[in-house]
Length: 400
Ligand code: GLY
Image (tube, rainbow, N blue to C red; front, top):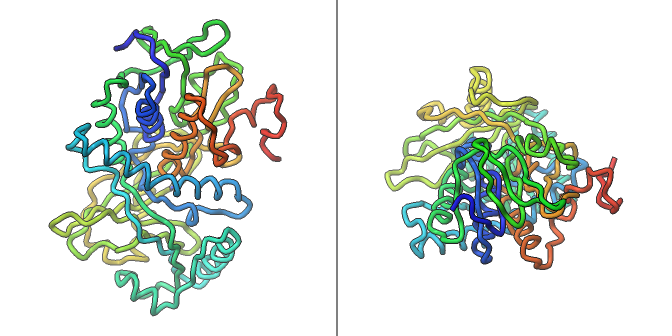
């Protein structure tokens, strides 16, 4: 129903925008979602680690707290999505593929082991309960680890999900939802009427009117606000992943977050298929800059070199996909979720390395703002106005 006024217009149908739109429609709002290629941005590259501990870093306590809230929101999100799918709103989708089982933080050499011990101490400070394992216990728990591995820690709360399957499930749910419409066009600017956001104009010149606008266009979000006094300090951080197809018995049982001579790598297995074969995602490179969608030889080489150093059995797996996309990074590594200085204009971007982890909690927070429900405290630190010099609330500003 392009052209009809909706309660909300969402720009971007990656996992974040699609989750916002689905939760909004479930809350009774009418929604238009615009995306020329739904689900094909950063979500398409992501491995799906739901790993606030494995991604925790020194000095980033707020980010870790937000990540833990993101992890806590995932089970209800997956259950609600599965309920919608089972109710016939997309029965052909396999669902989000949420898996428990924790992850292993694996050290290749003794220098990496020293780093793993520092990370276990960091996790202790957050009460995350990561536990260092002996080499024998490491091998018992993950027999495919290679002989050179020097130690590991178990991170019990971590989970994983399948980002491509999740966004497919969300799009299936949206397609079956009478209150939602997904329009395959490219948003170019925010329509402003009477000083507030009143919809979106797309690249054909068509207007998509709405009572509120949510920008969830990842690293491209700043392009939508160039004519507005809305700071969106998001930059592209390119990441490449490689997908492997392992024969029965050829995939690790756990998510493996590794350090190989100081270089981070992760290996995320999906649930094995009925025939025992298994998709395994290896990720991810990280370099500053925009993305042309073309994986590089060096990126693929580096990922496979480090993954096979930890898990030599991966040598036997077929390489089935290489994907390069850009993550939306922010100056303080926290997302931008919430209102802006323009009434009716909200942001849901800047999730950097944690878009999959934070999609459910972001959708809850945005829908609470749209419906006037009490906002959750979890994403208060993600208020986009912390970067707005005209914001009257100094407590929202980013710390130096
Ligand atoms: N969450 C992992 C990554 O962005 O590479």
